[in-house]
Each structure stands twice: as C-alpha cells, then as structure tokens.
Amino acid sequence: MKDGLGRNISFLAERNHKFVPFITAPGDLFEMWWFQQGLSFLPSALVIWTAAAFIFSYITAITLHHVDPVLPYISDTGTVAPEKCLFGAMLNIAAVLCVATIYVRYKQVHALNPEENRIIRLNKAGLVLGLLSCLGLSLVANFQKTTFFAVHVCGAVLTFGMGSLYMFVQTILSYQMQPKIHGKQVFWIRLLLVIWCGVSAFSMLTCSSLLYNGSFGADIVQKLHWNPEDKGYVLHMITTAAEWSMSLSFFGFFLTYIRDFQKISLRVEATLHGLTLYDTAPCPVNNERTWLLSRDV
Image 1 (cartoon, rainbow, N blue to C red):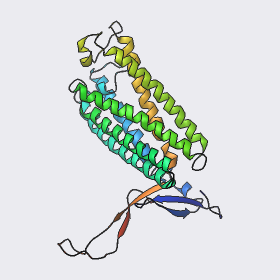
Image 2: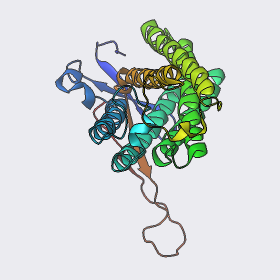
Image 3: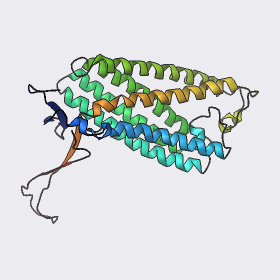
Image 4: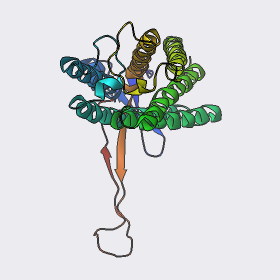
C-alpha cells in the first residue's frame, strides 16, 4: 500500500490485534532479499524443510534397499531405522514451522478484517483445522504404520483431511478479501491448488479403501516391497502417486503465502507486575516491547 507521497506502507501485527503502520521508502524493500522481507521466510522454510525431510529419508531408504525406488508411500521411507529417526525428527520440526505459519496467517487475516464477522469465523475455523493438520503430521512422523497402524492412519487423516479443509477455508477467505485486500490472481491460484488437492485426495481415498479392504491379504500393512505381478499393485501405485501429488499441492499452497507474509511482522510485549521476583504487591512498571521474529517491514 502507498501513501500520498508514493511511499510504501507496511503493517505490524501486535498483541492487541491492531496494525501499526510503518512507512518505508520505495527503495527499502528492494535493498533486501525477498526472504528478508517481513515473515516471508516462514512458509519458505516450511516447504523447503518438509521437502528435505521427504528427500533425505527417501534417498536413505532407497540406498539401504528398504523400499522400492518407484513411488513408495511417503511414510514408508521413514519406517525402518535409520531413516525413520531422520524422518521423525525433521517432520516434528516441520510441524512446528507449520504451526507458526498458520498462526501468522490467522493473525494477518484477523487484523486486516477486524469487523467482518463472517471472515473472523472462517479465520478461526481455518486456525483450528490447520493446527489439527499439524498434530496429524507429528503423529505420522512418530508412529510408523508397521508398528502403530491405527495411530498412523489417524495422523494421516488429520494431516491430509484437515489440511485439505484448511486450504479450502483459506481459499474462501481469499475470495472474500479480493479485490479489496489482494488481487484476484492469488484467489485463482489457490483455487487451482485446492482442486488439485481435491482430485488427489479423492484418488488416494478411493484406491486405498479398495486396497486395504482385506481382499489382497492381511499382511499388506507390513508390505514395503511391491512387484508388478502382485495383487493390488495398480491400486498401490495410484494411491502412492496421489499421496505425493497431494503433498505437492500442499507445498504449492503454502508458497502462495510468501508474498502475503512479506507485509507482516510480529513482536511480543513483556508486562512486568513488579520490580523484583519476590512476593510483593504489584507496582506499575514500564512495559517492554521486543520484536518476536522480524523487524524488516
């Protein structure tokens, strides 16, 4: 946003849900790398770190011949030691990054629409769905399907199911906020990504339901190696391809946050209730405000 003098105005999300405008010269933003602007590094770090977790565990599992190189389940690449240790640790960090990204998005939407009741309700619903998806990601990371199948499946349902609904809610919010808050292009990109995610989710759900209904053997849960002549091989390949495709749609969706996050920073306010840590009557002291993550914008 620009003022009457053509200067860029950025905003700061505070604890009281209000935006404090900070005016910067037009050239200030161009003196920084794109990931240094605001909190844009958060969705970038989330996607890069999660992709690295998938890639490193995949390479390790393939090198040790623990899974087949052609389209294994993502979680199968983190089922056997040592790659399961790497997979679990990296995905736990990814879950934390995802929580931070979802929370910042929630604060940004709330501050941009402080009086829109419909948007506020949708925004809160998106926050809950997103946090449930992060919980599911942590469950998938720490409970392998060959050991705790029921918990692993619950985690996968939370991750992909709640994550898909989160993307859908955020797309509706993008529609509600355009063209006043942002352009139509962002909405259309997110809508295409949601459609991509929905098609992948439908394919994965349908084929996995057929695959695990008991017709192809009771040991299919423990199966990590597949041959083309095995029963259910085609369903297995469609399911795994849909799973990887769905993950890519998630990556693409969070990457659309980069431009939005360039225009927000967070800071934390520490309130002291006394000048010492002894049990004394409260006395008024000055509050200290410090930047939580970024002060570039």
